[in-house]
Length: 436
Length: 157
Image (cartoon, helix red, strand yellow):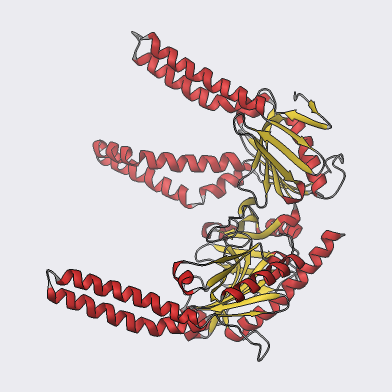
């Protein structure tokens, strides 16, 4: 368990004592493997080399222990303090108000030892803050305290109950992955391999050797998707949307609803006959000051595969889309966007803007108007010739999310004026809700 | 466009045009110098390079002038409007409450002409509100005003 050490009024806590083992075991295992191989190769054995290998393993473990000894954390009810580093002390303060999402991550090994890593995503910070590892119970309690405090409640409030929305069946996940491009490539390659081998075994072997590395990458990618999204469970709770997933390891994410910058459903062409789609949310991540300002948004999956009805019921937790009127751009825009015109459509009410685009896949984005950072109207030479213009709604992150593509110029001008006003009203409303 | 009729759009300093002319001129001079260097060995190629450089410079002045003229900004009560571009026309509407930071920069050429660029950053990468070629006084005024308004109207992410 964690060892509380008192420093004045502050109650610092350590990470779980097994953390160096769990964290170092990956590299230690690799080293042991290397050692074993070298052992087999030089079986007449110069003992000095073995000593060196052994020393490296010990060093890794010792460094891990030192890292554990110098790391401590403390939550005072509003700010999470984390201190680490032996030579260069690194002391972080994480205000709960800036939390974007909290993940509880358990790789396989951590699961075996009953520990978990807490990943806290903060707006305006370089990367996720990580506490690796804590005892599962401690991690769960800390997450509850951070979230309660984030929502302005007493940190001692117990984790609120949740309402399970859906569990993605493994068979459907497998089916959805089978219907993606990488699987098609994989099957095509295997077929090619089989045919070549049947015709001439020698050349078949050559083809196999050629494609092996690429194939390995494909298979790893497919496996990773299945492994990380297996048993995908979505639940809604007062402190946010909770997602649990994972086959070998497990990840449990909590996304406070008000932190969602944009939502997106993606319908790949092979899924369209089945009326399946994927649902993703964008959260604000890092704020960079350099050229191309803005934060690379963090995309999280809210549903790896599901029917469109299911996706819209989950979506309605975040944005209320009460039948926004979706209209396509004028037909002459087909000259400018011949490949995606059949999907283009957009609309808005006073709460949310919806825009659909895509060539093969249909991508629909929902942007709550109170999250809009700026409104832009862009008109290229071809668009000017056609008398159309595009209006972008920018949200935090690198992706432009809702674009009213190729609208009639008069409509575009009206959109810029209307959306500017509507976004301001939406902002004022949500600021009022925050102050409540 | 979207602004109230007769709303006064502000433009960058007239010296921005002179600065762009100087930039184009510098490039033309570079071309001519290259031509002279080439001329040592190959006279005919040198003449071609020199003529092409001068032609490009003089014709690009036309486009550069239109681009300089296209810049404009308008401070409204709640937001800043920035328009730019000739071929691709862009208009950005950035609410003051969304500004994360205001940056005043001056590149090499701008420093030589005593001008500066005011850049507005929001949390979105594409917001893209930049006003080049401002007089130092105007840049400072804009910076302070934007910073003050940004603070007064700040909104969370």
